[in-house]
Image (cartoon, helix red, strand yellow):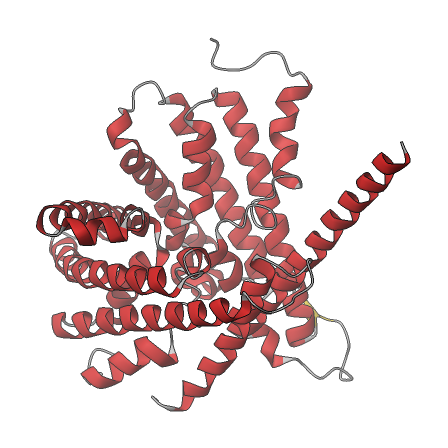
Length: 216
Length: 193
């Protein structure tokens, strides 16, 4: 089997697309909740966290899928965690070098990417069984889906909680901030709200399908 | 920070800055195993125990890393220590009390990826706690985690009987409950200082 899939057929691109919507890690699989809730109080933090996770996910997918024949089955989880921890350490030092403010705002949650169940989950469920090319696409798709979900939460919480978006004032002085939205409780409520929206879509689709079947 | 009295560290970790409801650590088991009161209690006990052991190990590791001047190895060594602690605890419980081992079941290996444990190790290092303070901090965090889990399980058992719309059922409902609990825990904010 070649390391890279040269045939970029429809099924290969599917690996990328599925993470964006159909198997969105946050809204559908409900994985990696801790960082999603903790650092989504502003859109900027959410975006940074999403990109950091995307980087770690893609890199660990590459390493794990290329080593998949050499990792003994008994110690695979420990090996995955060590690979992930290495890339997280790199990410942490890079963020610290780029912006100290961002490093302070994200705090220990950069280090906690190690125990994000999404990354370990993709390593175990996908990268350990597929080629490098497919694993990169899978990591990119899942990472972008994760970043998208974080942005959804971060934007809503920042708009309601402090009347700004990416630090830009939206409402001038006429807006009374909902402080609750930046506090921990707001995170739970916002995520619950988004899940409701998704459930509503799913239910509407199911109802439409059953109506169509009845008609046919 | 380093001079905090022990009772204040305990109350802080347990109630004011509850690991689940204020720091969002350990959300996965919090949502996953809080459906029944009995399993929630057992999970809480197991997590508290692993927290205590890994907190002591993390204290030793950190002291060692500081003497050999290699702070960049912190994350890797912490996670390796936690993973092996969980493995050791699992083997120990299996040998000493097979009944307890069966009761805990799959929860034990899952604790490795519980971010509350790694979070605890990182926080105690950042705060520069001494050995005794670390132990009390771990105990407080564990008790707080167990408390949140038990409260949640109790509420969810009651809600089984309630008539809720289909759209809300499942994770969305649990998250809303967690939000309300989190507001309730904000009431403890005045306790410490």
